[in-house]
Length: 320
Image (cartoon, rainbow, N blue to C red; front, top):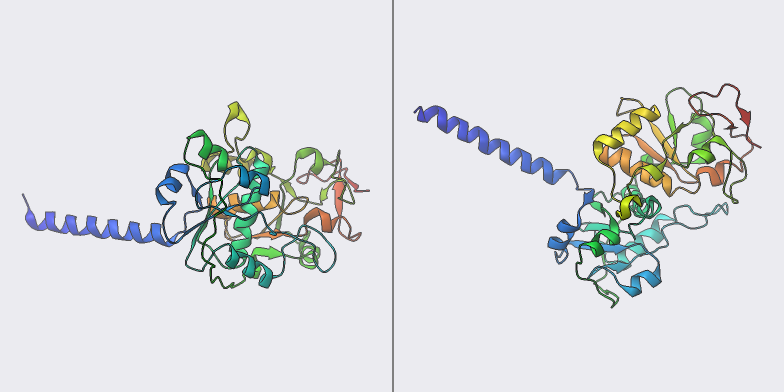
């Protein structure tokens, strides 16, 4: 046996293990299982946020979870609802929830539908926008926790106040004024996370002023990103491979650095699109249109198409 070569090989192997461990530590874990949370639920730096409604939280919740229904979204100065509150308000809210800059924040929802998962994703996007990357969604939400028959609690959790300080990242969000400038520029990719019938212009929510989609936008429905409702399954995120197939099939670029703007009706489904593209598929320049269709449809100078798909606007008519 060549002990010299063996020693070198062992050293290289040890170095590889250290580098791998360092990389895994440096990259925040963005999706955790119930098994992971069960083994870390009492960690001092772990803060668990329950973003379900108050009655559901009171009925039962994961031990130690803080009631964190909101306000993650509110009315802005232009009286457009469902947008992010001012940074200082969110900062104070997160402090009350026990969040510090050193916290590992785990967020969970009911876990029945993709809409539930989108609620958690909106909280994740908010934290990312505020500069806190060390946060994750509990895959399958409370439904997955219950199906494993893991312990639950009914007494509200009251932990120590956190000292979170925001460092906002403006590149995570895009305003209506910026959308107006970037539409049709040939480089920014707009992605609609709503249902196909809304994108096509067949139906719309009552609070959305016009039918259709932002002209030229691609369709990648958030509703299809989980397996919620299939065979009574919790709303687990689809595999990375399936999500990549969806992105490719929707026409998203292979270039991971290209600017992508995600939108929906009120910015919640868009947040699930952000979560998938940014944290799971590795797109580095994903921005959430906070006002989404609620704001854009009111602006008459924003081009909106209907009776067509974004990748083929030929024959489209202006959204009425």
